[in-house]
Length: 206
Image (cartoon, rainbow, N blue to C red; front, side, top):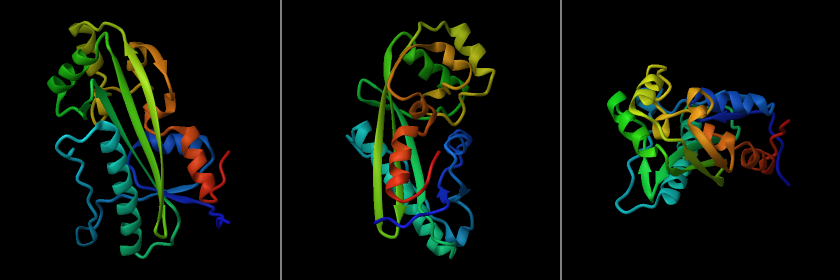
C-alpha cells in the first residue's frame, strides 16, 4: 500500500505545468535542476541517432524525474515524490524542438501550417528508486497559415521555449482546426494521466 504524500516536487520551470498542478489542487515545490554549480544535475536533451519521437520523449522525461530525485538527495531536501514531464512535437516521424529564434520559429510554423502533427507529452514520477511514467499522444490539425499571420503571432513572444514554436493556450489556439487527444497534454501536462500517476504514489488530487 502506498504511503500518502501531502505534496510533491515539480522538476520543471514551465509556468503552464505549475498552473495545471494548481488546477487539480496539488501542493508542490519547484525543484530546479540547474541550481548550485557544485550540485548540478543536468539532462542532455539531444536526440539519439535514429531515435523515434515516442522513445525520445519518454527517455528524456524519465531522465528528468531521476535527475530531480538525485538533486533532492544531493541537496538533502525532505523526500517527496518528484514529478517531471517532457513535450515533443513530431511531424512525419521527425522531432520538432523549440525554436532557436524568430526565423526558426517561422520555419517551424510554416511546416506545421495546413498539416496534422502529433504532440507527445510524457509525465513521470520518481520516488525512492521507483519510477512510473504515462504518455499522452494528441493529434493536432493546423489551419493554413500565411507568413504574415505567423509573423504577427511571433510578435506575441509566445513561441519562445515551446516545442513546435507555439502555445495552444495562447493566441495560437486559433491556429487549431482540429484536436484529437488531450488539450492539457498539448499545454505540457496531461491531467488525466498525471492524476493517475499521482494517485498511484499516494498524492491526493482534486
